Length: 113
Image (cartoon, rainbow, N blue to C red; front, side, top):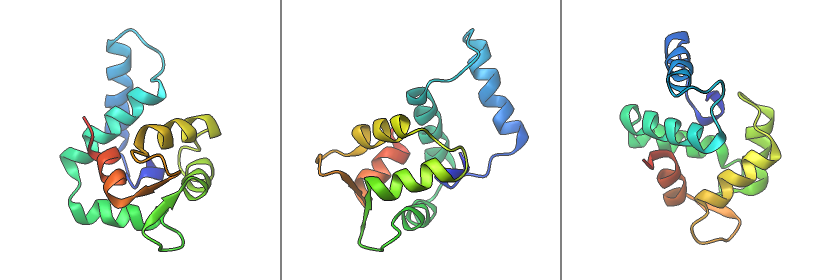
């Protein structure tokens, strides 16, 4: 969650755990996690906060988040996603299939229901 620019409280993390347990699960799969994060960001984040998150991922400031940039951040910071999880994230969000995310694709990923 912190890798995506979120700073959840213990109560928010517990709410996610409770949601999974209410569905009879001990874990949340990655697509479910993305859905939960997207809805959380849609509810709480302004366009400015999403732009700031994009800038964090766009290391070379070229207006795109490359697969390598996303992989580096998501596997080394915060929740430390696996390469497979990052690949899945890119595959889902990269609408034009060019191997990188532009701002619009990033916003769509972060605000999708």
